[in-house]
Image (cartoon, rainbow, N blue to C red; front, side, top):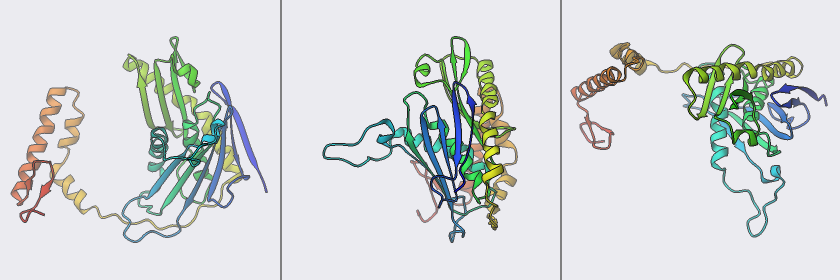
Length: 299
């Protein structure tokens, strides 16, 4: 058994990636440690496309465990409960930067499982979920155009802080989570208190520069632990409806939503909506009071 481990300083703590020790039957498995917070990210992928699939069936499951915080369920209920709201939101946070990096037309089922093994109550493991999932996909045989790095940005005492602790975030004016590749930003989610547009832009730039260290570690791990990518077939999507809509609508809606003047923008989008309704009714359809569509036979 060959265990590969790489670490570096990221923000205020050491971060490490380790592969080759746990979950070896998965297509890819990586343990990410930041401070004393630890997550295990595993991925598996189907070898055949499910019949009738017309989208990428990617499932990301972020699982919190009470033992990670040193607690064991007691009393009558001794099992873990349903996923918390934080776990569900972290699953979505992990999914968003990963999904665009699979080949277009790749409709093989993929499951990403992230398990929190330990949380030190200082460093939030949600960012580790993105990094671990990306690393696991990169060293697996599943085609993936990663790696993807991730970081959190705070704004404390007039300064940007990379990966602030849970305690520091209580006095931070910003809680920005960012993920991206070496060249581009893929996902930004933020909660801010009266920051200017210029400050928000600088926060994104600061975060993108800060996540480069997590990409460096993944590239080191890929160089020694990556499996050859599997052969696969790309499904050809039916774009006839999209082509018809694009031919009919043209750039009308795109130009409308990019207009910086709010009144003009709303007027142009309303005009597109009215045009849509007129075309739909001209083909025999009618709108319902609840916004649904029914044909002439009231389907």
